[in-house]
Image 1 (cartoon, helix red, strand yellow):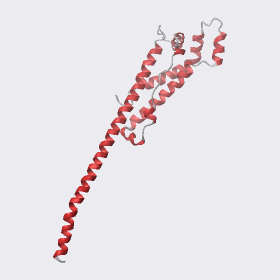
Image 2 (image 1 turned 90 degrees about the horizontal axis):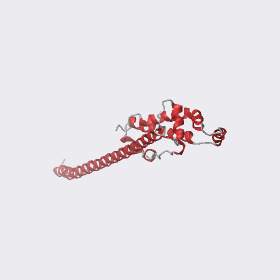
Image 3 (image 1 turned 120 degrees about the horizontal axis):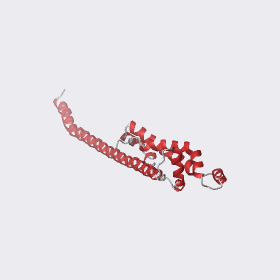
Image 4 (image 1 turned 120 degrees about the vertical axis):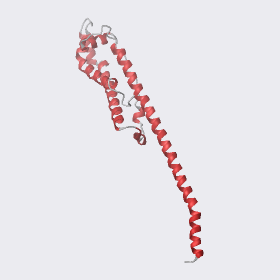
Length: 190
């Protein structure tokens, strides 16, 4: 090999090394930026989901306490307790509105911000909240046949007792769904 050819190859490599170094540095910095953005996205998703979970749990807990206080005598018997709640105005109480938007619109790339246990816990809690809505609706909604049956009671004094007997099984399901949400630790570990 000639010296000029060897010098040409060496000169080529000497000239290429800074370019390769700059390209590697650029790639490293780009990857670092992407990782930092991803970490910010994950942290934001976790904060927003924690807010949604905690607000839903707090709202349900306050509401559950409020409607149970309609029984001013605090009956131990479940049917009597429900009847007292009916007489106290349970039918006129509307459920608070819970938010499921952050959970339902969670982008696929942000699922990685949560552990498998957290995802399962949030899903279970939200399903229980939806059950609360269904059971509570059944508990306080009077159908035409319910109204006709209640109107048969001429004095109207015992309508709450009759309704409580008919709907006590729904109330126990409601209470179980409520406890699944507020009685368990937060799925977000807070």
